[in-house]
Image (spheres, rainbow, N blue to C red):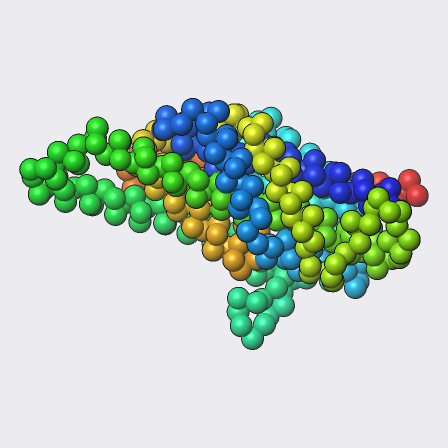
Length: 370
């Protein structure tokens, strides 16, 4: 049983590594596309800021570990979690190979839900659909933590992209109208220079926000595996070298070593990079300049940090993609390339059922082999 637990942790870290290079593009595509940083410089910036962001909190990790599946109704064994992770990994690799910016977050959630359903004999009650608290920000379950944010975050990302980009365009237009020094400062050369520097800050902000949300999802899976193993008595007699596995608290506690390990692995994955997806986000949807990159990154990062504060595992991919769309729409409604957007939307729609279906099938195959 200890071997299986260690295997879960290993597979979870493999997912975290893939998440790093799969979602690297989300935090650095715009800064590369606008030529503010070279790909190598952008990856280093993203790796460092992802690491810092991943260590900034555990609210999202607690949602994954205890807010989606009713562990009192279904026994989430190490084998079940491995199937969940493999389902997410397979979908991530498929979309990475196709260059589609799908959501690692939703792939993981889909894998976990699909595996839990199969383990619970397809009883939908094993999933926590909705738990309403007195204070709405403490609500739990798939409805509050996944479904509503999944729908609202792209809408907010698109809207915020339009608002920020529209505001910046209005300011520049006003400077042009003022004449003199102000008008000279509003020229494209000066605007690109100013926002080229500003985009360094927005790209770092985006990397930090990505780490604060995405890295925590794998922390939650590992914490769930350790909690269930501890409840089953697997950790009662650990060898001395494995004492670090003994949890410090209950199901909702994320031990420090889990947070640090996941943060480092994500940073390592980020350093590998995901250039296929960078081309889709940074070049194919709409032509970007530094001011557009700044607006998109600021919009997306704000959504991610707000969601992380409330423990909502939202998709970095959804927020940055729709923010870029919003910025492009504000710039020129006809500049958006609808064929590329259509492919991305289909990847969004299919992610949870596809990853969940793979995990569901793997769990059923596991039961047949037993």
